[in-house]
Amino acid sequence: MNRTIRRTSVLCLLMVLALLGRATWVQAYQAKALADDDHNRRNTIAQYAQPLGDIIVAGNPVTGSKRTVDSDLAYKRTYPQGELYAAVTGYSSQAYGATQIEGIYSQVLDGTDNRLKSPTDVVTGRQAAPGSVLTTIDPDVQKAAYEALGDDKGAAVAIDPETGQILGMVSTPSYDPSTISGTADGDAWQKLLDDGDKPLVNRALRQPLAPGSTFKLVVAAAALEKGLYGSVDEPTDSPSPYTLPGTSTVLKNESSSAPCENATLRTALQYSCNNVFAKAAVDLGQDEVRAMAEKFGFNTEKLDVPVRAAASVYPSGMDKPQTALTGIGQFEVTATPLQMAMVSAALANGGELAAPHMVSEVTDSGGDVLQKYADGDTRRVVSQSTAEQLRSAMVTVVEKGTGTNARIDGAEVGGKTGTAQNGVGNSKSPYAWFTSYAKDRASGKEVAVAVVVEDSGAARSEISGNGLAAPIAQKMMEAALKS
Image (cartoon, rainbow, N blue to C red):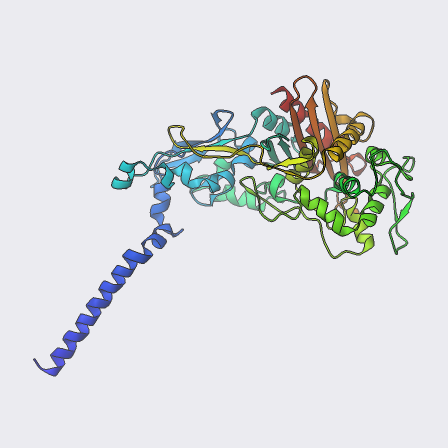
């Protein structure tokens, strides 16, 4: 064999070995990465090869599947009451992916979760029958919230204070996930993206806003826990009008006739006295107020219910005038409706905050439980004495203060209104807030609720927590107690 042939043979051998090595590398090390690649069409075909499992509310599915026509994706998702439950389910789209419960539990719902596979499925490679996701949502509370919000832009959350179960979660304007579940829904998708009211945003979890005077409950809790005042009925040291420290800016109260000078915390909550809580925040100091806010859940980066909520924020690095403004839920304080519902829930539950969650179980196709979420995982936020005092003061707010529209016959109802400034110099429509709890006097059943109305179309003079948000909360609480 001459030298040229020998060199050619060696080169060919090396090329064959390289090809074999590459094939081995792909099969042994890259197979899973390629299989899991988002651009692998086979994954999408497998995902929609059979009807998806369902998301369940009170024993009934709020999702479905239907056979497609002229598509290699055999089934697509349907939502019989899409707009009502969109803030709970999210969407599952053949073109745009999946969000919220649909996204978090996608492998359970499409049958690819390994926990669903029988030994036969493992051997044959056959796709398992899909499982289901059971929620904690109460359909009566959900419907009451959705209908009460109506055409308003806003959100509402209801929580069982003892268990942490989320009983209702609504964001408006809503959308029908069915309209974007297929592969040819580009126009509907673009319309949702172009909508200035952002219907795809879950305002209940993902849009923190200035909480306004509802945040005064947090400041009051800090004042009692730190001994700034001995009780909600002890007079405070609160001049009215109150000038922000080191400035000439006078902080006004909503009503010039309200008895806010040196008012007790009870009276200050009843009339929503800005001077009392701004000065209390300064007297406590931003670190103490922040510590209390964080006990309630503010500044938590990973609050999963199981959908991740945006962090509600109590800021740091402030001067005294800025700290004073945080005392009334302004400056850079932000909160989601979920967060403000958690504040009322902790106070209603004797000072203990139960971890909020809206999924109770994940099951296989036969109903066997794959994963269970326990109720009542609690942590103490404030003492029982502080919680009792603030509940009593919240009742005063509803019975003869700024929250009278939340009253329910036969129930103890406590709440706190808020009207938060929006825009530079409050140039935009204020946000109307209400956070509350209700307890049925006969059964002892309880619920905590928070509502925010971003925009109702009402004149500025008609915007208030009592006028816009409290009636929505009242309907939700009434539905929860009756359910």
